[in-house]
Amino acid sequence: MNLPLAVQKLKKLFGIQTLLLEGGGIANGSFLQEELIDEISLVVVPAAECNEDAIPFFKTGKYGAKTTFAKSFHLKEAKRLNDNGLWLIYSKN
Image 1 (cartoon, rainbow, N blue to C red):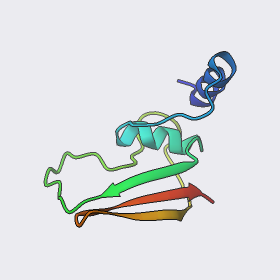
Image 2 (image 1 turned 30 degrees about the vertical axis):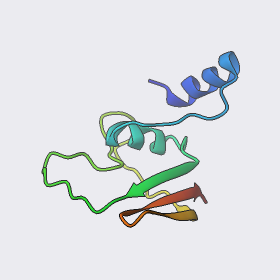
Image 3 (image 1 turned 90 degrees about the horizontal axis):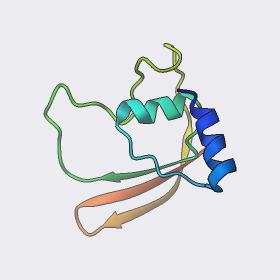
């Protein structure tokens, strides 16, 4: 799938300016590889995933290049969520 073309068509045909990406690690990684992510909204809570098959937040898959370089984001905002977690918002550098 040509993700940049798909995003361009959504904007041109439907006037969509902003997308909410709620993918798994592979979908997130695919959009990140194509530099289509401008902001990351991350909620951190005191819970642990103890499954060795769990997919991380960003993962490369069959889509796109095999070599992916780290992408840099900066902390835009941080909010405390009651006593249990943090909501971190990062913007693309």
